[in-house]
Length: 114
Image (cartoon, rainbow, N blue to C red; front, side):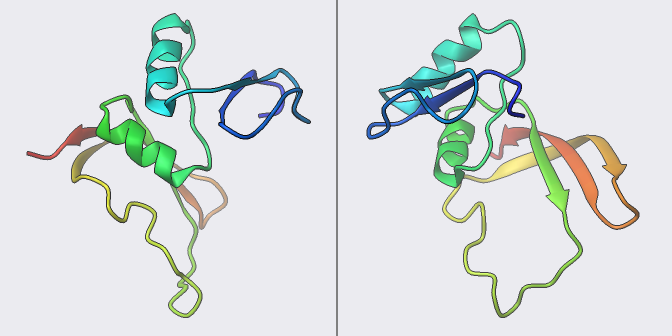
């Protein structure tokens, strides 16, 4: 991942960042991603920010959702469902693979549930 260009949407960070080929952009994240999607010749990826990913899904800017399942039950330590508060989406499975005999990677195409 560090070899790919990155855009960081932030109102507090200043460049340069300790990440090769990273650019800091200010503004509304959904607007920034919509503009990047129009300008980019390669697919965009988003990692890490649950609130950003929820906002991108709500804005219809997500073409695929990749879910990696790790076989663990965290009944005592799990604190926040990752899609809590998000809209309802139907997920069409478009790709899957098992990584190590336990961990599965599932890729879905989301559509807003109506």
